[in-house]
Length: 210
Image 1 (spheres, one colour):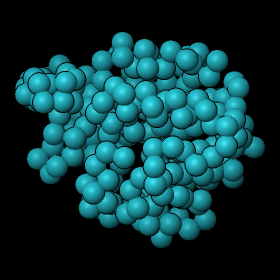
Image 2 (spheres, one colour):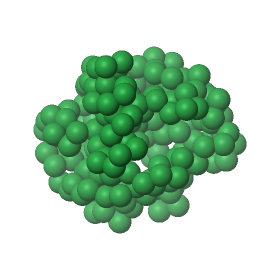
Image 3 (cartoon, rainbow, N blue to C red):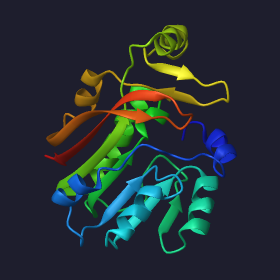
């Protein structure tokens, strides 16, 4: 539930730009799958899936502002506000979970572990997880802010934006440690454009829960 106020404040104006690998997703996830987008923002990815013919779609986000925007923009989507860190769904009730640029918004290892634990709870055995997020960068601008904020947040890769957001870029080893309960089906490093127009290292992963 970190930084709810920030995301509510920018919910009407932020445009998320990291690409969804729809073709690869369709190879692993059938059209009849029950899909949950955790940290769905205003529903951009779910809308793309709806256009591809997926119908069992639910999105959750802790920012009420993002959810209100999504309901106005895509009224046919089931978008819900998360009031707590627990996902309000039964155990094993979901075929696929999407985690699209969400880990970057969770600065602590413990917060990320708790989220993955909840995702494992709601996924059925053999369910699919699609993750898209940001990796550490080697350029001077990023390295300076990683060093500046590491003593404050206790993790190299966490940084603050001037507008108030606290974000995290990830060590690739940590990504695989965090997702050790999953079998990797597809992993690819990519270059992303951030929400503020910069270029960043990133990845997407499609994995199956053990």
